Structures are given as structure tokens and as C-alpha cells.
Image (tube, rainbow over all chains, first blue to last red; front, side, top):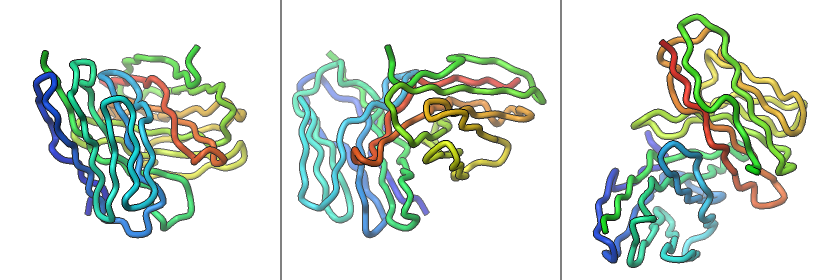
Length: 112
Length: 113
């Protein structure tokens, strides 16, 4: 069973059309939820870490929020340069180690 | 200069060949990781190392081995490459004193014919 599920798999927006990406997780006792941005052919770039329900973080047009079951990445008035794949990852509580479990990502395309 | 570098960036090889992918970092982080990324499967952890003397298997270690030569260097080897090891490979580093956030290298695109 997948611990991290991202939806939608792909999203096409017009420039300026705000929307949200979803990351739902099944682990309990979360020790961190991470958002990354990945451009084609490049490594993931760290965006945010969230630790507890109700927490929010913002960076330019992006805002990440966290509940007990899911996280949202809100994109306000996106621009074409926001086009990328957005990855969500969780740090489960079980092993005590610092590994991450990644979702499969949401591919965002913003058209001018 | 990039904090995490990977060499080579692209490699095409044949089935049965031994391949080594290298990762170097200047971030001063103790922890290093190797992932592979396949379309539709996301990032999966192969091996990780929390210091020079520590090596741990990840989710998909079969067919791979690693070497931590120094704090800054972590190599991934495919002893006998097979076509289903064709993928994008990423190295990452983290610092447990700074939220243990993982920072990724630019990746190596490996094709096994």
C-alpha cells in the first residue's frame, strides 16, 4: 500500500489560474512532510518542510499546508516558469532513520 | 559551483558490464543517499550512509553496491548491469543538525542496452 499519494498526476493551468496540488499520506506519527520541485532532467530542489497539522509555509507564489492526513501545495497566479514536477515525501516514524518515502509527483504545466 | 556533483551525467552501457556512478559533495554533510527514478514509479531509495563507516540498504538494493570513500564521496556500482536498471540516478546529502533536509545532485541518466 502506497504511503504517499499525489494528485492529480498532471495539471495544466493558464497563467494566473490558481490551483492546488494534493499529497495524502497514510503514515501516523509523521516526522516531517517535504515538498520538492523537479525540472526535467534535473535533481529535485527542496521547497518546504512541514511538521505538524495546521502548519503553513510560503515561498513566492507557493504555499504549503498540512493536515493530519494530507498536505496541499497552493499555487497562486502561476507563471510559465512554475512549470515542473512537484514531489511530496514523508519521513515515517518507524525506523528512527532519516529516510524519505516519495510520492510519484504531480506534473504541472502553466501556459502563457 | 554545485554543492552536490555526479559523474558521469549520461552513460550508455551494455548488459553485463560493471558500472560505477560517483557522487561528491562540498556541503560538509555526513549523510548521503542514492536513489533511482523511473517514470511512473517515483524516487526509490537504493542505499544510504550516515557516516563513512555506516552503509545501509534501502528499498531496492539488489543488483547494486556502494562505497563511502570519504565524508564527501559516495559511489554506486552496478556489478553486472541489466536493462531494467536503465533509469535516472540521484545522489542526495543531508545534515541531521539542520532538519535533515535532503539536497539532491543533478542526476545521472543510465541506459543499459
